[in-house]
Length: 484
Image 1 (cartoon, rainbow, N blue to C red):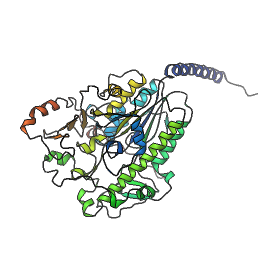
Image 2: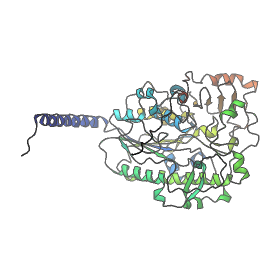
Image 3: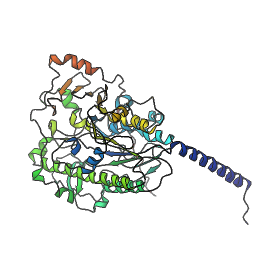
Image 4: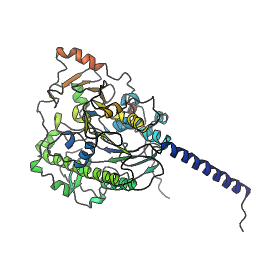
């Protein structure tokens, strides 16, 4: 018989004892958290208000997101805190404004910033209270994830996969292929959002030893605008309605506004018009929305038919909006309504269905709201405000506006009626959504609105941390050494 050393024997005893202690601790945690609801976060990339329940576009069809809205509270005046992927997603997951963290652009990601080691993200806070954090798809920006955020990680593809085939052959020189758009002919089950929905559905049907917080991130309608051919057939190009665009819309903007919102990655709006590609691109964006809605439906079906149907909170949101010609531009990266306005639905146990809230709310409030709804220990270091009062009564008094930031010291303040923008050089814009929902008339220069601007300006962030993109070095993968 093989002899066991004294050290090995002691090690096995210690490990066994540790296992007993861990088991007892898990049992204690389980007893404490057993009555707490699960959390399902559904993040959609670049989805503006072109969803049926917000009425943003007459040709859109989103039956699955619509049914979620019908069984929860729809916030129809919700806005992102950063109109770009990284600052918005970082703000939401950490409950902090871009002006608090210094993350204004798509770099650096939070796990590249040592200061974030002292911050506690939403998944980590829930894990500390006995939750099991899981994720798949795009929840944060980029290919990485913060250390210790998630215990279980599913598929996480990039925006394009090898099966994707280039559709547009005459994109402007210098424009990346990421701005391609059109149908794809490969098997639907291999589309990245279908893969992520399948993974999430499987997790929702299997047993879990404790409450979970699951974050599912869908890529479309982010560029490239790819969806299966079947979906495109349901969105006839000739019948597509173009968004309302005013040719001289930018004439009353400051030079700082024009400079800040001019980016090189998308083709200019005139390219879409002159090459007769505007309708084709809008058709592709609408097709992507329908495709993603189907994947949302598959996840909801799995939840509704599984063991967690009655004790799971569902939060559906987009990271920011998207221009498709409005303000003579494409993509996000602006402080106007088209970039900041996002879908936001909260549904689940204890939340009355079919309610609509018109108060201005922020995505960074999702973190403190879920803490509140799940009965976890509150955090004093978050910028957001719990939306629970509005979930209980959508017409409850509500003072805070929604604030969006694009770069250092550029902010938009959105109330129920007004949008006020102030740029770093002091340039201003003011829009009255009661009479100008397209934001075509900048009223900032009208003296009669001076007092209103002053009141709105009091909400501008007092803390404006320098841009970390300018102080954090880029990290490059080390080159592989050639074998001798």
